[in-house]
Structures are given as structure tokens and as C-alpha cells.
Length: 148
Image (cartoon, rainbow, N blue to C red):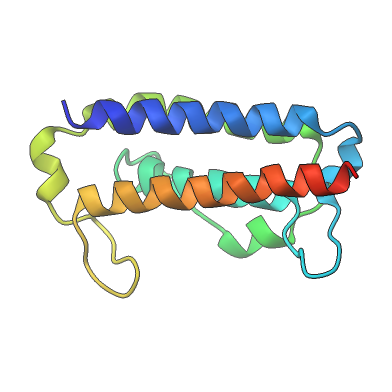
């Protein structure tokens, strides 16, 4: 089954986001921005969760989630507990929706345009995974930069 590695990686990386959030010694630092770093860990978490809830939850799983991408970048000072709860909700969605994707679905057109073109579901899932890893790395660097 082609979807299993995607499920494994999304679940691993969602757990890693929770881990990173818990490693911040000062909860307020989740929202700290400095210099050229304009996206705090809290912002990146909201963005990652919004992305998965929209593209996996709403577009593939028909969850009814309506994304407000601007809010992902404007909301501030959400508690660590609430952020982790949002991550848990995304985990639940990923666990429910991804196993419904069949091997033949990978070559089918994804329901919405992305990057200015129609793409296959396989292409979009790979893009979502690499996008997630990119921002997860930013969260890790953000936390370590603030620790010094």
C-alpha cells in the first residue's frame, strides 16, 4: 500500500511538533520573533495544522474544515496546551483520512489547484510532506536560537 509511508511520516512529524513545543522552557517564547525571524513556533504550528486540515482533511476527507490562512499568521499567544490540542486534532484527521487513499488515487488529479496548476494526489502528498518538514526544521531552529 503506497499510502503507509506517508501516514508513518506525517504521524512521526506531527509527534515531533508536539515534542518541540514541549521543549520550550518559557511558553511565551513560542510567540517570540526577533530580527529576520518573523514566524514564531506558534505561528508555524498553526500554519502546518491549517495546511493538513485543509488539504488532507477538507479536500480528501471532506471534513468540512474551512481554512483561514491569514489567521494562521496573525493569531498570537495561543497556549501551548491549545496548540498541542490542535496537533492532536490533525493527528486524528491524518489517521482517519490517509488510509482511505488507494494506490490508484496517487495518479488521480487532486481536487484543487496548487502551485498554479492541477497536480496529482501523489504529487500533493509529497509536497505536503516536504513542506511540513521544512517548517518543522524552522520550529527546531527557532527553539534552539532562543535557548542561547
